[in-house]
Image (cartoon, rainbow, N blue to C red; front, side, top):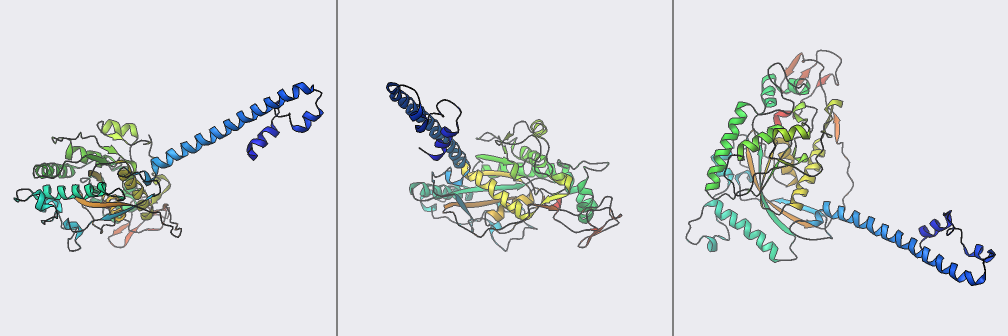
Length: 429
């Protein structure tokens, strides 16, 4: 009998708990009944042990179910129980954006076939012996062959996906930053909900931003006709500018797979003190984008934004939570061709997770990445700590000066910090 069960029996105030061997020896109960009592004690003890073991097993089973549901070891492409770490590689040599010579400041996806390189693949000889297939058709066939080879080898713990990550079109917060200048925007205006002419809290798209989605819509239509595989899954940040961008880009296209994007909390922009990074409630989001679906556990209120306390998310924290959401997608989505509508800062963090070179996106721009994901043995690394949210400098009123490269000087001493230094701001969102 376990120590815990023994303790339960000894501490019990019930008649059964009082029946110890010593009390039986002193008991006036006739000898012929002692055997019956012993049997009953044995039966009750067994019942208690059974209850204890059953509850323990159920509890462990429940915990195991949760662990398997969350752990990368329960990968969609492989059922592996002894691996709980995913290693990502951005496979180079397929897109111009992989090349260090490609300047992200001047690159436009619509001028370069989304950046797909004009090259041959090892599968071309069999798939396209007459050279009739398009570049996208041949690339898609090659990616399919990579996954087929992985599936044939039961010991291979690898999968490949093609992620198309698009930054939202220009929002009112972007226009406001351009108008006020980055230093003044960061230290004062970004903390406001808007001005007398525009609202940028959880900003929607400007007319220019809508035009950028029209451009993307037309270009995707032409590329789908050219053999680009239709996306099998769609994901979006919960912020309005992304919901609007995804809807206007894909909603009117004739698609073989239903356009039912999943809203994932952690695909949101870096959670700064700016009101453009504070999302609406779940109820408001549903009313704004009724055909979008929420991931499980999506909360009614924004429980992550700490702008009211002048606290913003650090870059290290953003990369860490971006790894969590990418792990979640790769763990539970068997599809190969995925669309993610997000933000410049968040896409930058995802590129870091995928071990891709830094590639900043202006509003409305799109970057595709061929991703190799491998299940690897968990590694033991030195524990590192970093601040998740830190105070950000602000002014209580419009600053006296706002000089690019130097920051802004506040008008009064009632500030979080005397001088606001330049941060990434919503321009990079």
